[in-house]
Image 1 (cartoon, rainbow, N blue to C red):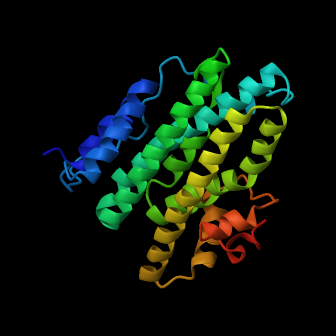
Image 2 (image 1 turned 120 degrees about the vertical axis):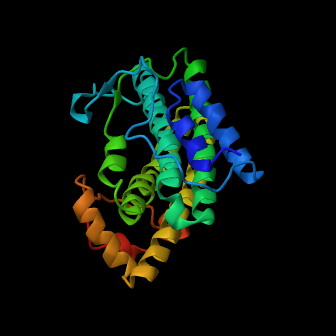
Length: 262
């Protein structure tokens, strides 16, 4: 029986976008069906494979998106969202494969389900781009997201603090306004996609917060204090309001986590 770590590594090293989506969803199904051995006998790659024609740039070198109501602005928005969701597939897979042995089966199950969600989100966004006459890879994409994984590869608490509890939590803050802007433009299909992503991201952040609190309990640490310390060390962007307090609270991120770190 193939080990779960080997299966995860194989998907991480799948560069074709469609193949990665299908392989991720199959991996999650195989895990749920008990078809993968609970062994961690295969290391995770330092970096996943992405489409070979993807034009990756530093965040500072990205072209300006343009006005949201223009065709250029709309394409840039949906392409940016597709890139975020595509990278999120690999972030979730790496989380499960890199830290699953120490964290246990529930942890692996949670983050493989996250990876499957992100694959579904990407497929929806790729279909959206196709309806606009474009595709993922048609525009440049920034290479900043994976740096969070590299910087926290040594510590599961740091990874949880930054990826689900900062990066994904930021999506809870900004998605509602984007959703309303898209709906105002008459794009109800786009609004439905964003609502689905928002609903799922609350659950993803909740997984991160749950496992972070568990780690803090074993280390006899105060969760908000520990989180703030890790954010100061590993996240240079700074946390900026406004915050979606209701969505964050639903995900287990009460204001005592982030109120004093802005």
